[in-house]
Image 1 (spheres, rainbow, N blue to C red):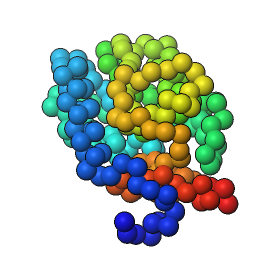
Image 2: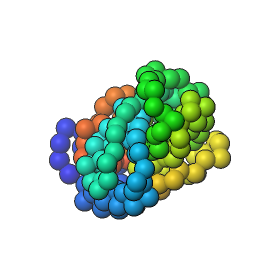
Image 3: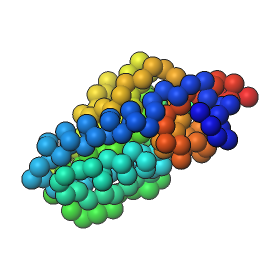
Image 4: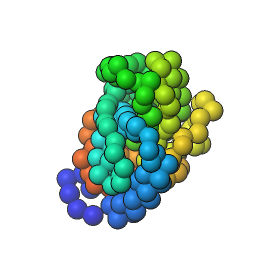
Length: 184
Ligand code: IMP
Ligand code: MG
């Protein structure tokens, strides 16, 4: 492992090859399930951008894309359990859209359970969820995503879109951050 951040990582949890395999498998399944529907991939900024880009170019069916930005974390590594909408989804055709929310990681479950209900209340035709990573042991609300790339243990991870205080997002792999980096 080389590069400027190397000393910040306890280990590489999922390397680039393995991530490619995960996204291939998810894209195949989504392409089958959404055949004939009006699929709207709804990426949650900023963490989903790498995963969403990799996922959308592998789909074998038409898809539109859109984004929302929400915050449930202030900064650092602890959830605050509240969801603020910073960038909303503004379009007039939600009643015809089969929305697939694309998330980087599910932790407490607060963000996605809130967003699913929010979009249904706005009149979306259907709303399902797709996450690259899931930490099921951290749930605060009962929530199960429709598509999951990989379940991981309760460790703080970065890379492939995921950040710690806005750093590490551009890395092509998922790494476990050394606790001393965020306990400083
Ligand atoms: P939830 O609402 O608690 O499920 O929070 C999900 C959000 O928390 C994700 O979209 C991430 O922004 C953030 N998050 C949770 N765990 C991690 C992690 O291990 N690394 C980086 N961000 C994380
Ligand atoms: Mg996020």
